[in-house]
Image 1: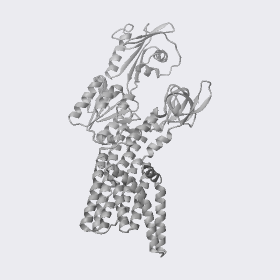
Image 2: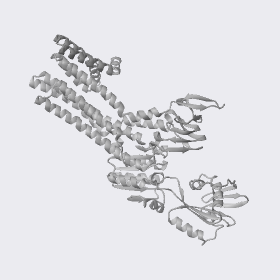
Image 3: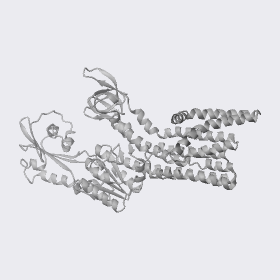
Image 4: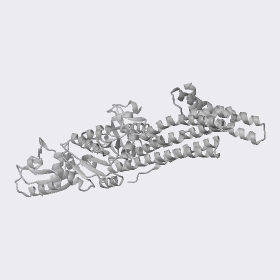
Amino acid sequence: MVKIQLFFTRQRRAIVVLITALLVLAEVVRWSGQLAVAYQITMAVAGVIGLLPILLTAISSLQVRLISIDVLVSIAVIGAFIIGEYNEAAIVTWLFMFGEALEDVTLQKTRSAVKQLADLAPQTATIIDKNGMTHQVDVDFLDPGTHVLVKTGAKVPVDGVVITGTALVNEASITGESRLVDKQVGDEVFAGTILEDGTVTVKTTAAGEDTTFGQIIEMVETAQDSQTQTQHFIDKFAKHYTPVVLLVAIVVGILTQNFRLAITVMVLGCPGALVIGVPASTVAGIGNGARRGILFKGADVMDRLRHVDTVAFDKTGTLTEGEPAIKTFLVLKGDRQAIINKAVAIERQSAHPLAKAISAYHPQKNLHPTAIQTIKGQGVRAIIAGREYLLGNQQLVSEVVAKGSHLDREIGRLTKAGASLVIFASADQAELAIWGIKDQLRPRAAGALQQLKQLGAQRLIMLTGDNDKTAREIAAALPIDEIHAGMLPADKAAFIKSERARGHKVAFVGDGINDSPALAVADVAVAMGSGTDVAMDASDLVLVRSDPASLVGGFRLAKQTVKNMNENITIALLTVLLLFIGLFAGYVEMASGMLIHELSIMVVIINSMRLIKYSPKN
């Protein structure tokens, strides 16, 4: 029976076309004045063809002790045959089958965001072998380390690092941002992005389902198949609702002795719109978010997010860029460009975050320092052209710079402003400079946090391991309500636990490994897409763009999706109520009631599809 049922499912559209043709033929026969029996036979054939797939599904439902919509329709259609209403049987089965076919089409459209993502995933890659020859290979067979050639107009087929060439890449499929990103040697590229200009060779780090793009698709598909608390309730409601409708129909039939009325009650009581409305909203809402780089890991995340009243943020990499940048450069002695040339040459030998900030300068000469010595906790000592230079903190240069100097005053001023300091000094005291380096606030952080308050977040809190002075320096430009500095990972988790114990619904936003404990205990865990894999694994919501404004979009989208669900539930329940009123008032019959019922299903699906185009304005 399973094979037969599968056949009918695959041929659903063809069956609908066949029944439609038979209905048209029956009407032609009736209006042409031919034998009435020909009309009845044609309608009976149409009814039987339509009943078979519905009846098979109903039997399958009963085998697992579930009284589904198909059970109600099957009983009603068989009842129509018993009382000789072949036209009613045919029309009801046609409407039911036609409605299911339309549901399939429209639900496919609500999944369009994921389909668009999946279509962007390249299936093959041009690899470069050891002999320099190129070959086309299926991406699923690529191993890490494989060299892949990507030319202008092609999709990047793997995650990897550029080893030769330069390019402009459209990363909209990953970040949602359509602006072109310049890629040079050493930069990361992602599968599914489009190389708009240039040619590069990429060393593969991940391919196929293991790429960032593949994980995004998998995450969204899983989320779309998940259920909200509302959906769980509706499923339980429908499970008990359909037997109640069957019981009511039996009681009505016994009390009124009107078999036709009883089977009509079964048809009109079908909760189709109620069952389909919530998952349709879920699929469309999560798909919309995926297209915008807002990845919900489950439909229940939307339920929880809209109830959040407290949002706690890690500072570094979340509210700030996480990459220190130079705010002040003061030359106290010597030539500015000469100092830059030497400092960059020395700092390029270091992986320290502050060293990277100075290395961003463009030197006019490529110098080669020797005798490089790293002094733990202080900085670097090096020789350039026979002269010794120091680059590090105040303790490192104290042996060559006298106390009470102009340098001390500048150090005090910059430290008070919350900057981290790097000092350059020559051993002969002929050259002296100081850099004030600070982590940069994300450009849209202040506006995003203000909008979160407008959306119902009553408290915005900063939880950071940094010192209090640095934390307050960053918070001064933000609408932050509380600052908790000097916190270890366990302290952040304990704070969130205590807030939840007090009755608050807490979302935590972080990006690092040290944020994982706090993410694990929050009501809603939000990870920045630029963060660590551990943080993203522990999260409920991933912001691919690493932009706090995306969190605002997530809040808006969650509220709109749940609102859409409630609209669908209201439409479904009102339709059933009005149909029963119309039935007992004598205005609604079986076929017309079934038509209205199917139209209500279409209305809730179309209403859900509005979420596909919804734009959460920031």
